[in-house]
Image 1 (spheres, one colour):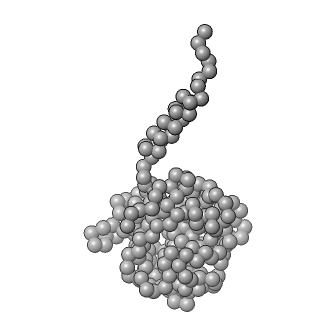
Image 2: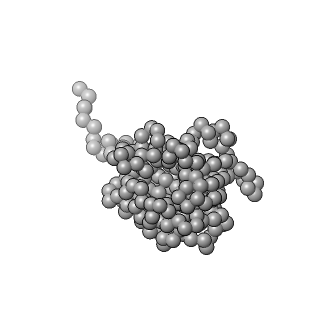
Image 3: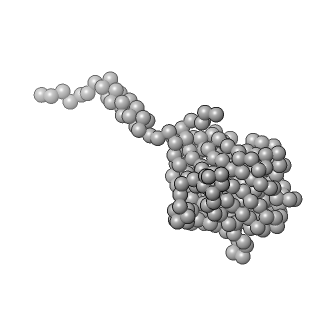
Length: 242
């Protein structure tokens, strides 16, 4: 009669081999926003421009060419809307988020801690437990879905870099400053953040999968006109080598 019991060492060897193969097959990077290579039609199909009020203006997002490379330009003229894309990313597999942006000016009279002056030249949202529609509207609404929350990386107006701030509209959206003030305006900034670690710092527990990302340039509170440029955004397994 054949032996029905398989030695434990063989089982463990098979599991380790399978895990090793899966790790080797998994790409090192996972694209979230390939602005450098998408068409206008692909941008419109994959991203949604969400306004924060029924009668407010929308920020205008457009693919343009700059120095021979395609990027995304955001122009906010007394406007506030986000460009949002649903996706699914495990931060245990891809904990690092990398992106480039360039702000040309800051909103006058804006304040990082004030609801009345909550405008920023550049924002990047990493959203969790989002509904299928109205992703960021829920974050701004006190009656929104309780489980929807976000990390919001900002070009701050005054706050020091790496400061953690609750969004003035919702404590479910925690802001983290990655640039601040006017010192680097007009220069491309390359940002790399450990989203897994930032989430634990902001919310005190392990992160669930990412369900959407969004970018936003907004100036509805300060009635300014802002222009910001966004480059490609991608998740990675490790910090990129500088």
